[in-house]
Image (cartoon, rainbow, N blue to C red; front, side):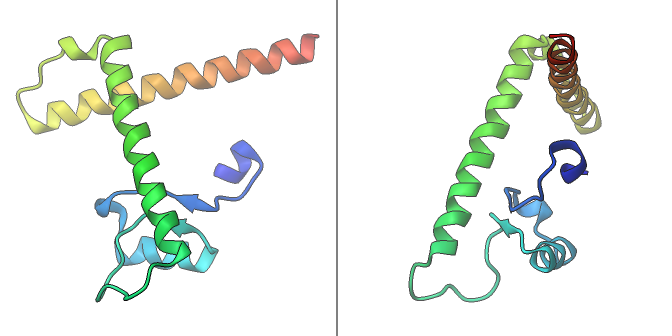
Length: 118
């Protein structure tokens, strides 16, 4: 889907530990995708370039994700929503993420239409 939307293959993925299952690790390894997943097994003795890339991906992912949640809470007025149960909280987050994605998609479509009209 990423290639269809953006025209390029995924090279790097940032994801937290909930995405670091065997199936996702195997898929990423098969496709040659670098991840921010924590390494399994004993820690290596020396620092490698891959370790730096992994740490940087984890930092950027955390910053972007946490920043986007804050933006959604403020911009889409989600800070006023008070969830009492975990399922409700997940639903609020779901709608916040998808609302933000729809806004970005709409902006991109408008830009494309303006470029075609020009």
